Structures are given as structure tokens and as C-alpha cells.
Image 1 (cartoon, rainbow, N blue to C red):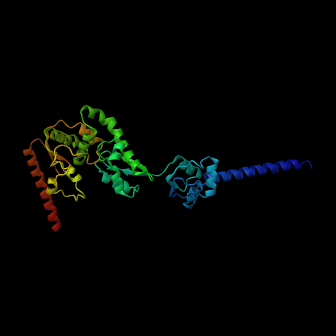
Image 2 (image 1 turned 45 degrees about the vertical axis):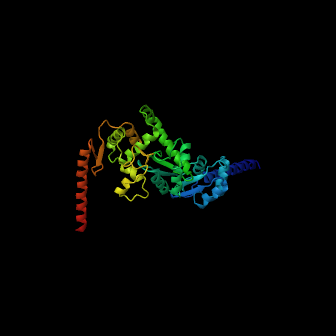
Image 3 (image 1 turned 90 degrees about the horizontal axis):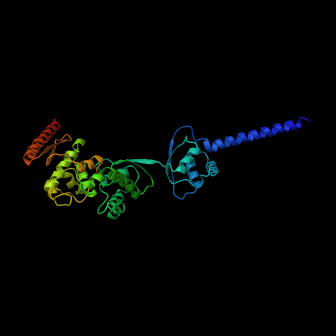
Length: 349
């Protein structure tokens, strides 16, 4: 009779330990047991205003978690039930529920990389953003970037955002608005411009618009990076002497659906951007210049060149006189003609 209390105590201890083990197993399952042991990515969108239960159901349907009910319970336990952030998420099905909850609370949404090379125009940037799957309509992006009122709101008076969408690699997220993406790009431009360009530009009496316009032409004309200061010197010298810039890229910028073949008629057509017809710079940038072209526009090489012609290898021949330039044009045009003739003869064989 005296052994019963001892046995009862043993039963109670066993029951408590069993309960603790069961609770531990349950907590492990709801917090740390992944949906699968085999890796696999799933993309799940969390709409703004969606209930946590709806989000949990979507995660379960996508195979990201085992049980929506357990996930809701876990979220309530750690206080994450009402503080998750909307957006598009990329989950691995091997991730534990606790890590998934952390991502939702911290808003670690999926990033889409958009690379904007130097020399891209607004139209080309719009196409790159669309290709990344971030917008459906290029036209809406272009129209917003060319909107003068919006440009003024961002601090670019009297123009559009052409030239001010800084070339860089950006990480955007689904759900970002066009305005948010444009603001990110122009903020990057401001970071570079005001830290590295503006102080010297002010000393030289160059406004932002004038400098960026010139830099955009240099960007489009440059094949070999080391030639930027030389090309800049040609345009600076021409501006001082009131000689027309005669830059093909400025003419092309104003041609709708350019087919790659610049015709004599187009060179003679008067547009605000045709520097074969107008004097001085065009009314605004023709593309987004990078840091190197901005610096080249600010600090041209100390050279007396007034002309340059393509050598058809990515570099240019620079001349100080029209006579020398014409000789160079004839030389390199003949070379092009010979190369074209050889290719045509090879095609016939």
C-alpha cells in the first residue's frame, strides 16, 4: 500500500514529460518543419489588405507550408499576425515556417534586376523595365518620364527626365509604381551629380541641363572610352567658335522609328535636335550619360580639334582643319567601300 504514491508520482512525471515532448514536437512542426526536403522555388503574392488567413491559405496551396492553420497559430504566438507586408515573395519549399514568417514581417520581397546601360534613351529604358516584367505598358512609362510637371516635381525644371535616369543596375520589386522607379533612377543621378559634378560645373558656369545635354551627345558618339575627353574637346571648341556640332546622334534622336540608315534628307530636315541645321546644343539631353561622360563634358581634353570621323574600329580620327578632316573622311570611306565590295563578292561565291 505504501508504494502507490511513488507509482502515482512516476505516472505524473511520465505524463508531464510525454506532454512536453508532444508540445515540443508540435512546436517544431509549426515553426521549423519545412513543406518539403527537396528544394523548389515558389512565387507568392501578398496583396495589400489581404487577411493573414488568406495569405496562409495561398502559401499552403503553393506548397510553401504544410498547414495554413498551424501557420496562423505560429503567427499569433510570435505577434506576426497583423504586421506582415504586401508584395511579391519568392520562397524555397525547404524553408522553415519561422523563416517564412520573418520574410513576411520584414518585407523581404523578390527583387527584379534592371540594367540600364550608358547611352540609353527613355524609350530604351522603358523597354528594359518591361522586359524585366515590372510594367505592362512601355507607353505609360515613357509618357510619365517625359511629363514636364513630374520632372519639375523631381527637381528638373523646364524639361523631361531624358538624361537624368542614371545608368546603373537597379533592384526593383513587383508592385512598384512607375513614379517610384523613376524617382529611384533620378535620385541615383542626383547622388552622382551633386557629389562629383556640380561643384566644378558651377565654377565653370555650366548649368546642369547644358552639361547633361553635352554629356549625352558625348556618350552617344563615343566608341572607345578613352576618347571621351577628346570628343568633348571637339564639341567645346565648336561651341566657342559658333560652329554647328553636326552630330548624327542628335539628328537620329528626333527621327521616329529610325531604321538605322541616316539619309541626306534627314540631315537637312530642320528639327530642334538637328545639329546640322541649328547652332549650339539641342534643347535637352538625347540619352542618359554615365559618370565618365559627365566628367568628360566638364573637363574636356586640352586639344584644338574641331572634327572627328569614325575609323570603323570603334575609334575616331581627330582633325584640326577641314582639309585634314576631308582627307580622313575620304580615306576611311574608301576603306568602308572596299570592305563592302569584298563582302558582296564573297556573298556571290
